Image (cartoon, rainbow, N blue to C red; front, top):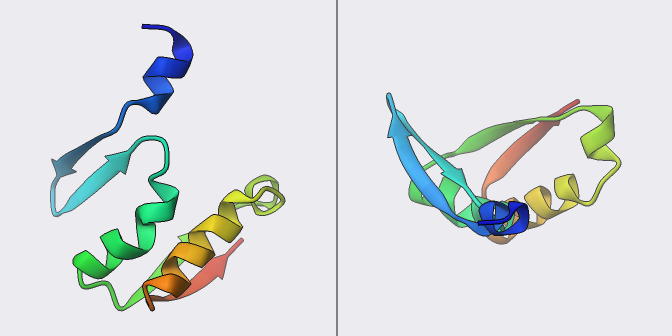
Length: 74
């Protein structure tokens, strides 16, 4: 399996009280995942480098579409 194939893999595992979701396209699924966990207000923690990419925008779009309240801390 080459490097790109490894990044395309998706999986989830439970650790303690939460589940960690990993894989290509998971950012777009964040809103439905959070809603399924009955999240009411999320804290999105980022840094300047990530904030300059489109990743933060995708996170916000997914949360807005799912109508999940959130606050960004950078």
